[in-house]
Image 1 (cartoon, rainbow, N blue to C red):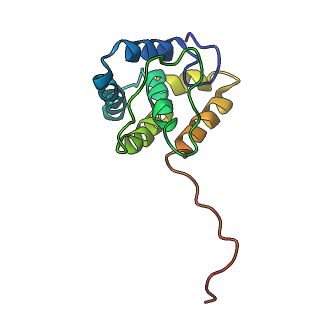
Image 2 (tube, rainbow, N blue to C red; image 1 turned 45 degrees about the horizontal axis):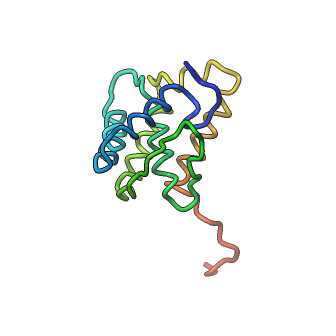
Length: 143
């Protein structure tokens, strides 16, 4: 695994995905992101492209409230479209698949001391799409 840190673009596969996005026609970039997510969701066998999935999800999350911008030099250089809202649900399902059994990326990280830290970073990324509700400060009704 050509990985240097836990960030979504801090590995060779994600950097290659960013390059592919840059080389893709602007009007086809959303389709590439969508296809990456759908391919992961539909994979019944061992998932071996989790790095690309995490990178694609990070790009979608960057456009959401609470999402972090992709500011690494290994991310895409070219402008990205405003992604369709339906990609958010696909992003959740794809991340769940990356964290599930039969995922090469999860298996590799689980073999390292940074595995728990990586899993936490994936959960934070997922939380952008499925945030925890704010706790109620006061009771609205007594029953």
